[in-house]
Image (cartoon, rainbow, N blue to C red):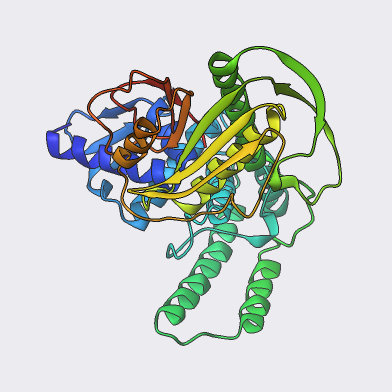
Length: 382
């Protein structure tokens, strides 16, 4: 890969990490190779090949990369080894697009292959559904039925293109007319929903990510402020605040802790939502004897509150800044105050920091994208 392509790939990875961190983190873990002629990039063991010319950060490039990443991450190639190749690829496309639409990645992509009737299903469920509706055995090819399926889906795609085109020209058609027309096409191609199923891949990914984050927080807190743990009861975090339940939990006994949250413009809202939620969880986890100072910072200190463990003020756990990222003022403030308490900084890592590490207190960076030059760096999956 030439230097220009390397820079372009790094830039695209950075965009993915910031906007869609799950896909960015998966891409960082996959092998990325260049073909002999230098014209194609292969991603993962599946050998999925995409042209190197799409290494820009356009919506189309991000969509194509994320779709391939999802196929590799979900092992669609391995899972479909004995399947009818045409229908399996179609099922994989429908399954991936369903997830990417929910994540906002596939919106406004022209010619998107999507059927509402199979939204949220696993790839095996979509494949079995397509086989049944086309009269194809799950391990055989029926070219006539496949051609009928192609014709029906092509008409659906053309209708989607018409809708997208009209949206772009401000000529919005009636949604009811669009839906009735699409239902007519779907019915005519015998693709009416009848096969039950639910795909929980996206939810599993998110819950696994949260489990990993909580383990990281537990480890960091115990290393920083001691291991004296006692059982107590607490409410779940604000993501589940509508559930009237109380969960058993560990609370850590400690003295004092400073938590700084990066609220600069480089942190997308959906990532900051995760960071603020985990900061609230951290406060709720600590014992009432512990004092936790929570600071929101970009190029300046935007808010500064001190809590007792278990005390939650949800009005504070909302974004208060969108400036540049410069932690100089944070460390200058703590230095002038003579702070000796451990500092946890939650950031994407795209920040200016002092050249010299403070000697009077320990610093732990919980970073989502880029390591910092000193202190303890712990990658935080979001």
